[in-house]
Image (tube, rainbow, N blue to C red):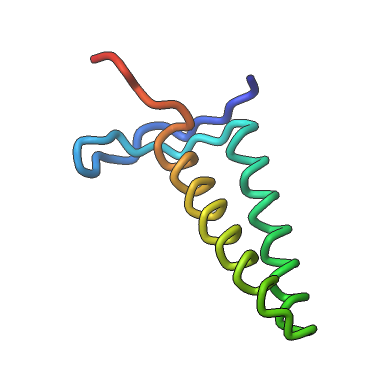
Length: 79
């Protein structure tokens, strides 16, 4: 899987922080951008259900894409 690594930035709560981007993080970020586009369209048309689902999708996919990038893309299971 293609992977871009910037090196170790530091440690936060016992987790090594890197900026790592893999295909999974890029795909989640693209879904986040599409969720934002749908959220803006829902606000324009005053669609309450679309606003709710857009907010849920944007927050969940946005959080997990950033978290995946900051934790190097893969969990480290050995020391």
